[in-house]
Length: 182
Image 1 (tube, rainbow, N blue to C red):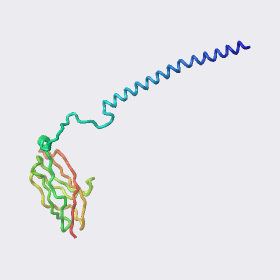
Image 2: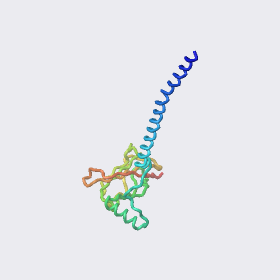
Image 3: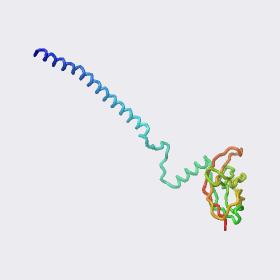
Image 4: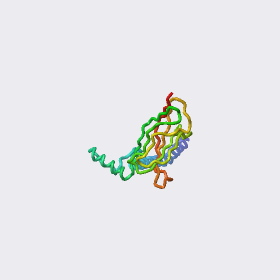
């Protein structure tokens, strides 16, 4: 009987050994896989800057304000600078006829037109101009809707067009105030 117990003990310990070796190998393979994954991820993060904004390789260090202004002027000459020239308030005594100062700056290269809207979704058009050449502008306009006395915050949309007058070159919105006297 003692022999049977010894054999049973031997069998159970050899059965454990059969599982320990594959378990150790599996742990080593998993650890190696994790190490390779982390090495791969860290290399990827270094290549893309770790998700951070990187430096522009074409950037030039500028310390002299005159040199910086020359660079900006050169860029604007090549790109075509757009200048906005206006007083941000138009006034009216009757709610329809407004005095204003809106100019297509002589510095611009493109013809433009303007639109006045009640909101940024352009829900209601209050005024739409004809084309203005660079150096020309308007001193007054007639609103499409009679406004009651008060102050109105509206959107002034500048639209610059290419020479064909059909292609929009650029468009920009600015806040604008319409004041109607009481």
